[in-house]
Amino acid sequence: MTYLVAATVLSLTLTVLNLVVLLGVVARLRGLTAARPQGGGGHEVPLPVLPPGAAPEEFTATGLDGEPVGARDVRLVGFFTPHCSLCHERMPGFLEYAERGGMRREDVLAVLIGERDEVAGLVAELRPVARVVVEEADGPVYRAFAVRGLPAMYLLDGRGVVRASGTDLTGFPVVAAA
Image (cartoon, rainbow, N blue to C red):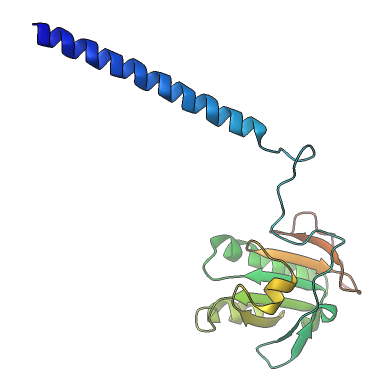
């Protein structure tokens, strides 16, 4: 009987201790959530892309068709990889944006991150609308645009300055056929 009472008291004590620890963890998580920036005040969360008004570093890359490409040669740039479901989801919008805006193939650059054999499917989709460059995540175009997340998309002006950027086309100006 005394063992049964002792076991019950020990079980109750451990349950209360567990509850106290759990409440402490919940309070700590709530504090972290409240301290997280919500945009507009305090510290801003860094964007995974260059912001509007910035300019990519100078770069020279060679497209799959052998043509040289530089920052001043393009108007719309997109970075995609076959390993990213979000890239697959947003790439059709990128292509539609280029087509709807009447952009020539020479104005559009698609940078595919990965090995040539693994990006072959994406190349087939992008090549009719964009010049395509395949490189690793530390390649010259990737570094020039300071990409920190994929997908990444940029609209550049005639001087090579970022007009709009993001991981999707939200906030990009509406383009009409030129």
